[in-house]
Image (tube, rainbow, N blue to C red):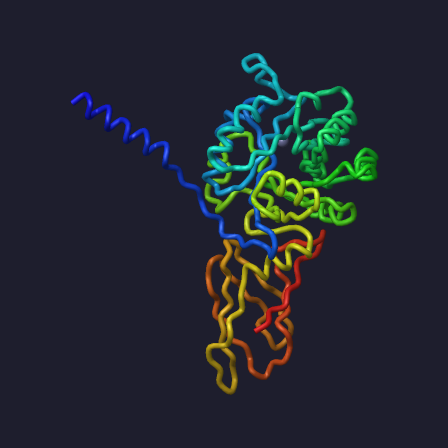
Length: 353
Ligand code: ZN
């Protein structure tokens, strides 16, 4: 009997070790690249977050992400009376768990200063403790010496810019002149900053969407299909390819039902998501066809030219029946209302059948 229960216990514990599901996010790759789904801005109990670092891996696995960075504040450690301060601790505690879950873990930290320069994430670093120095410029320099990537967080955050409008100060221009600033958050937590698109395009910065999560992800984005994430187009699914792709600026921000980023990635990404079928029926008046959207993102096409449907909605993971007038000779050109490619510009596409 005793033997049997030990045996049962063994079966149960083995089963527990083997289970665990992750969500599958339906987003296409780009030709020559794999699309990595990433969240590069996360807090834990090692700064002002409420969760233990390994929970960030469990959450990311469940959410179907490929990569995360834990970016605890260097200058703000309110739990220090209970948890000793070691800015590398969250990374050390998490790296084996990340390996066990096949998740890419990026070593990071958040350089947390008043505006200017505001908050900046240091990613792909090797020693966060070396960044905990008085001068913010020295912290940036230490990041660069470690081969790190600097990401300007929430530039229009109302706690630092009461009107919500991002501004570039001398220190940001200096970072850009030095080629030390590599990315910028277009979307943070629950808000986005249209002007960031201009900063990104003018200064060659990669565009990001991150959660900046302090509590449990499941509570914050309950009812949403996904957390905000940065899509990175990497040559392969590895830490080093991810890094190369980010320095090359191959990203799109994905949040709610929106995408934001450079046209050169947004346009092929859109065309990888959808396919226009051959007409399956036509008579003297009309042509009938289907447009299939194989992604999790619905697309809202508006501003069709005269003679074509004025708008077409392509729901996620669905095929949409479209009837075109046979007398029309105009192209099917649309604005995709939920793909932002500039401060006040959305992606323009042409559908061909
Ligand atoms: Zn943060």
